[in-house]
Image (spheres, rainbow, N blue to C red):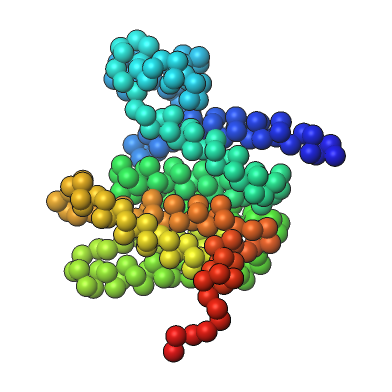
Length: 273
């Protein structure tokens, strides 16, 4: 009964924590690829270089209060900043509602934050920094060592091989067909990390959606003529979106609502051949 009474407060707290983490991710996304410290100095306006006061750095609310402009120089502030904060806040709240206050929730939300940061860095710089790969592996080792996930170490190992291995094979095939690098090694390393959290079945599901999202993104960018002369399209955001979808539709115990829906609704048990 006490847990039910406190749950609304936990939701509010989770939302606030998510918004705050989103604000910190904005710093990481801007500074990490440029080899700058993520600890100091304090945040500054990228246009006039004036230091941002604490009351102008409140997630989402400050952006609204300032009407999306710097207090000093009145130059517009990118909508990306409150967007990332909002995404992190909502992701934290949704994952809390799915997993409850559990160790699995902590693991999944840490991975989700990592994927959000990777998405925006890959869009800007076409790279997935090794710091995120190392962070992911550390979380994976801790999670499996203390059995914080509903899958075993063996399942995590084969999930890692499935996700990362399939990306490697698809990348090699694309390179052979198109005579140029089709998939960056950072994407493959990211797949190895993510597979260790998902296991084989969920890794296959995430792979399936990553290629769907990648195809949709490619079509949109080509139509909008946002693809450069090198025709490079970051695949990290597609991997991140597919994995986040898999995490958000994951059931307690290691299952998945999408897989359950497919086998109970779409597939009648008969093979085509």
